[in-house]
Length: 133
Image (cartoon, rainbow, N blue to C red; front, top):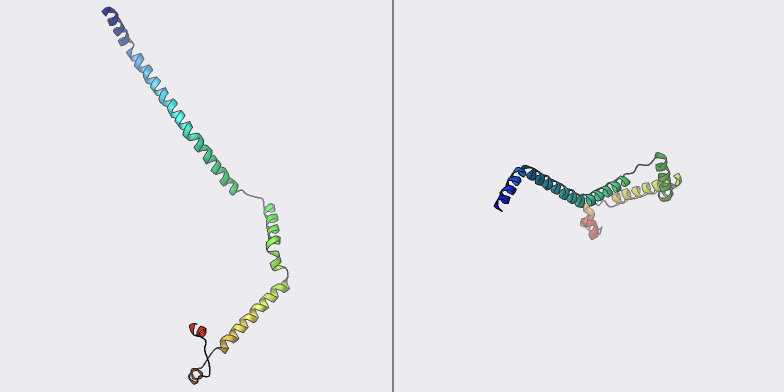
């Protein structure tokens, strides 16, 4: 029986380089498959998420043609702003009202100028609000 052990040892020694090379290849393939699986587990959901975000960003910044923009702008203007600027007469009335209000403010400022002599004589009464200004 000991001769059998010796023969087996010699055979193992003879094939040791092949066996070690084969074990290294198996180990490398195992690591590669594990890395591939781990990459798929992490990469596929992550890739889908990135794709979805980029697609949403692209839809936000979508370009339109000039004619489409003009149509959109004309509709928006008609719905929201056209009533404010329907006629030049309305605009002129607004400007006249503004000018009248400005003139009235100027007259009021002139009317509120008071001499110190009037205050000493007690001819003029002043509200507390006027003093705060």
